[in-house]
Image 1: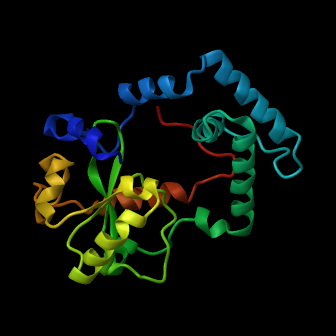
Image 2: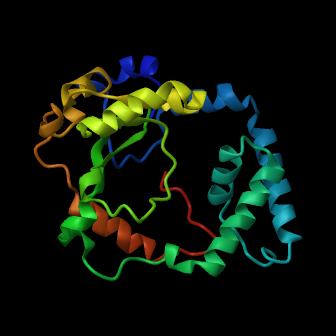
Length: 234
């Protein structure tokens, strides 16, 4: 999710996108071109350079990676080949030593209330970003969710927590102050999201938002995850 000033373009219900899309939004392509400032020929050249490094490494030698998969690492590394190479090796190490991360869950987790502490909402912002609803009261505080968030919106916290966060926020690193917003009421979320994206209990119009069938499908697809990576669906 983005900073406060850029949220104004997401506030119209007509601008939201479905969760499952089969194309890359135009704004994402434009942003990619502006930030990377690389021609397609240069991107392909760096992809070939990354493939060559992987072919010469004893850990990755013999693995024929999907090019779409490698492009994701290059994009995340802003096409810095050495950084992308390091991250692919980290992925291979994780896959080798903790391969349970790449296996599906063998029971119907959607039927357990304790597994519903975090869920994807069924619409994306107009820039393609996904919104996750994280309900801390239902979570296991001893577990960590390995996700990188672009913005945090905290609402309905207890008075002690809100007071503490308000007091320490001025002393947080600048990047943290930019991505953390503390709300005094759920209705304040409507300054950042269109009503159609939010559950009714947070001032929106979504009465049903826990997508059990969608999560089951993702879990099934995860069971077929291969070390070479998967192609994009568009």
